[in-house]
Amino acid sequence: MRLPLVIAFVAALVGSSFPLQARDTVSTAPESLTDDEAMQLLAEPMRLVSSDKIADARSKFEMLLKDVQQHHGESVQVADLMSSFGIFLIGTSFAPGREAQRPLGQAYLHRAVSAYRTALGGSNPAVAEALLIEAAGEPSATARETLLKEALQVQLGSLGQKHPDTRKTLLLLAVLRGDPDRTRRDPVQVEAAANAFRELIDISPDVMARGKMQDSAGAVRFELAAMYARNGMIDRAVTEAIEARKQVLKWPDVYRCGTIEIEMGTLARALIEGGQAHVKDVARGIVKKSPSDCAIDTIIVDN
Image 1: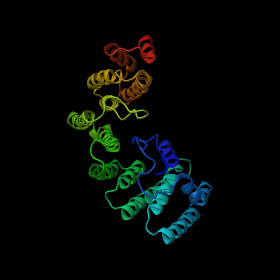
Image 2: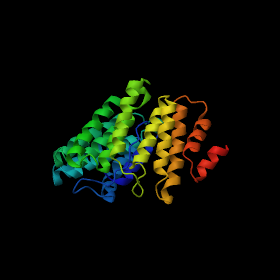
Image 3: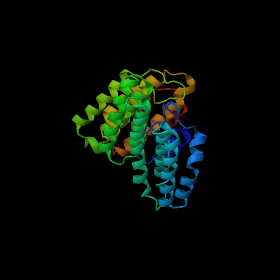
Image 4: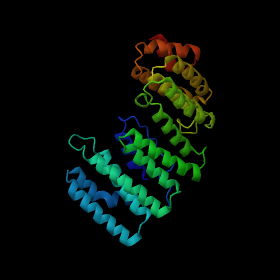
């Protein structure tokens, strides 16, 4: 998948509850189109979409697909174009009056998954990547989970459980399972989701790799704390947040305080979502039990 389009797609979905992470590589598929090639080929269909000429855009795009198929057969390039066009349709569907573009884009993402399977076989990591992109645009939580599980099976077979991409998918599944709409704040359901987080913590590295904050045990534990907070289980959220901070504070100085600031902000929002009326008091309690020299902690305690 081409990185600029994926980033635009993720940015468009910021308002959703599905935190799609950018993949470690631009594409896992051999012979994939480059950024420039994809943008050049899609220039006219995208221009027509931007001009609200959806029917013309789809017609132009299907002509493009036929031309690429004639030259390359049922290839990765065909799958790339389907995925890129679907991403663009969904990414632009959030503008007023363009809501109907989202299901159209979703349909192209679904076709892209089949196209990658045809071109590469069902066990290639690029198939999992395409499934994850389709899942990101899927409005139904049940359908999203099905797609995530399918992607996970591909990754487990091709990459293994401890690969960063596989662990990202495991995190997406844990977050989905811990959503209050799913758990209904039932303690049994919440703990089942928590176990998924804990299993992931056990196989995650102690210290983040450069530029990959989420790829660490401490960051996953912060996600666990936020899950408890959204479900109104404040005591458990506090316990996990304290432990997460202790883990992150062992990181190199260049990473730890920035991560603490981001994660404490995420936790505060989760506490609000969970109905906590005294977020500042909860945050102060967490800081006092896991103190640091980070500037954000001084702000939290003094305010």
